[in-house]
Figure 1: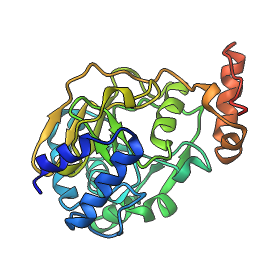
Figure 2: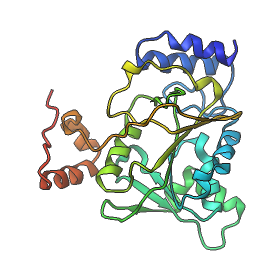
Figure 3: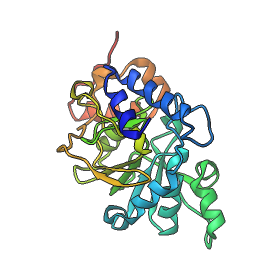
Length: 264
């Protein structure tokens, strides 16, 4: 089956979960991913991830960025490495947001290529990073994110846990992003599919560009950006699991915003 046929087959499902499953199944069936396998319930580490990442690094949006936030998944590792190599400020989300929002990766002075690559890997978050607090004055110029599926319009589907969308609205709340912050996703060509408009909610983060191993796609739609945390969608359990939300809720409370939780 060609990538075009894969996209066509993926158009028919009517829920995000069905689209995820079709993409995961297609990647596994056609051996389009590297370790870790299987790709189900993950951001797929697709074959050609470094080629897609390299296309990002050739873009003016990357070249001109001083502060770059990149998700910690394996397929975006090359972009993290290049950000460090070019001495950009690299921010990586704290895993599952358990201990804050994100960490800054800081390589040792004089780090060579091998050490920079270690800093760009999962090891970097553990051994070469420092937390960035909510009160830290930082402006993010570029966000590079993974996806399970993405459409040419810029609609994105992640692995279903909602952390990428949550990270973005938290960054809005701390003033770290603006409408000018560019969002790019790197995926395999087969992950670029049509996604029905009705599946996209106002809290979903859309992307500006899609980089694949073969091309860069400028997305068609004017981007909607989440403008803040919708506390009516947050549960008490989420507050327990993501402690940083408590601080953001108190901040919004002081600003007079409605911070009532979803008690269903």
